[in-house]
Length: 320
Image 1 (cartoon, one colour):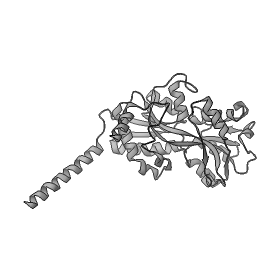
Image 2 (image 1 turned 60 degrees about the vertical axis):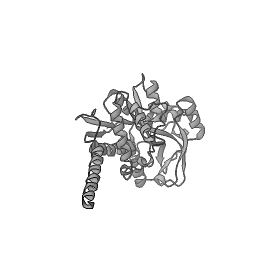
Image 3 (image 1 turned 90 degrees about the vertical axis):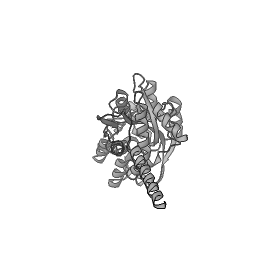
Image 4 (image 1 turned 90 degrees about the horizontal axis):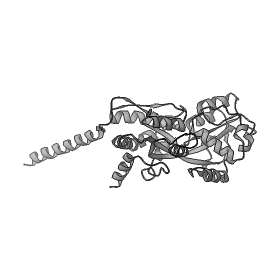
């Protein structure tokens, strides 16, 4: 009887393995054969890097076609998600708060909701290492990119300058994305640029290897003022010494980054995306360090942007 029992046991194990594999490869029926888009960001930023790897991973695990599109940044991403052009997108917490409230860069509320809080982004105000510019006030009358049009960088740069007492109109702003800002700085065409991204941002890290750079400090009192005037989405932070070749840490401000989707996205699709997002975390983190910061306990804190019902179901099932 023992050989028979062994064969039965082996058969049960095989059946369980097959069931597990089938469960891993299943997807919600709401997915179709169309190509799905993740609204990323500039090609040298964390958004695009993260989005590209996530799209590849979800394409494989869900057996769908998904790509990451290069965009102008948070505002552009929110508009694309709200219009249905992208199924998910990355957005700064402050821009997302403006989107759901219909304020700032948004003429009316966008029907977008949060999927997860991913990681915190840091405000970078980058100047050449040998620049005479010592602080934010010195940008008045200078040429500095405040970010591309329809980017979250543009939103936050204006708020920082205002808090620092610098008239935005006094800065010659060519409205460049990160890649173009880096190229313009290397050519000596601009004195500095703003950027908001994870640590390290690949394009700035590469720039720092080619030439010395510094980050202008952002004072805590300015962070407090920006919070009081807007959505309390910001916190004081530091870019650590050694990052980008910095000799000392640089005070700055951080803002959370969300993955967002349209209110109309089917809950089952959102659950599939979240399952794939967390499953791919360690794999993506090998190429995109910010991905390692994704945390199930923190992912639900997306206020004032509501969690999508599919996300609520996913996180509730985890607790169960």
